Length: 353
Ligand code: SF4
Ligand code: SF4
Image (cartoon, rainbow, N blue to C red; front, side):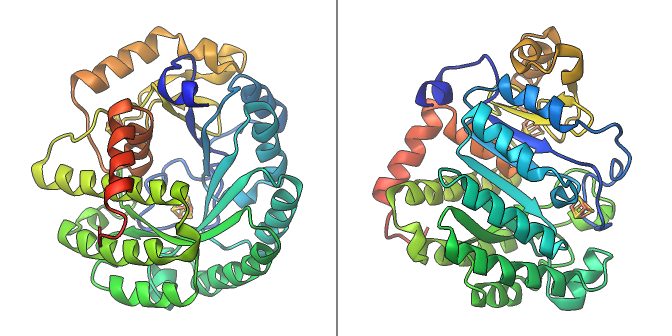
């Protein structure tokens, strides 16, 4: 795994998998809104199984969409990657609308695979009807909290289940972040994550965010995330250090309008879409190819000339953005990044940030 993290270039180590483009919401800040309910045919379980065989040492799998829990076979999808890709950490982002389905999944997966760390993050953008308005979905907030409460009961049975919230900073919530935080911390999640709105959202005005408000909010979140008893192991402190460094990079990037890290999109991280298209990153949209045309083999696709051209352009242009997943990959898959995280963990243990 260490070798794969540092040296292997034969296939990606970190994959973002949009398991479906189907969604039951129409959020204002969605960067994927043009594809929602439109990509067909989606990869089926047999195809996904073959893909998982071609990624024998996957470090981390992030499952997103669309709404991932709309897929009735999500348990089997995760099972494929657990068995065939040796993945031991899977993160799933959800809008929290499908209460029973999500609870059934959590019970099944956490019980069946005790060696798998499964992280479910429920997206919360605001409180009560303001959250519903952002999501264009009446009752969304109540449903999401109901799902969270039911998942808490599952978590008590299975320590390998981590449960958190994910807040996306946007124009319509940036003046209410403290209230949102106060509410969420009362629910005692394992962690509260923070994203900045990205891409070309359905409501373009949402992109106007104040980085000073991001900075203030991340301190609140980090104090909570750091103080949580479950965050005191060395591994957890590594993750906190990585999060803080990633936030520092985002703030410097926005303030100075230039890259802070070398982006490893298309080298250590890949994006797999529901129709089999594979891109280096979510934002540029440059397609490496369709995994169906490469016999579902990531190693073959990774040798494609298109990938080399895309990654050369990314490096040559010193591309930068605030996408948290890619910044994480930049930190954990480069020796320089890993050393930064390591020393931050050692020497900043008791500092505020
Ligand atoms: S942000 Fe997520 S929940 Fe909202 S429309 Fe987009 S995919 Fe669906
Ligand atoms: S910096 Fe951002 S936009 Fe550029 S390639 Fe990396 S992830 Fe994509």
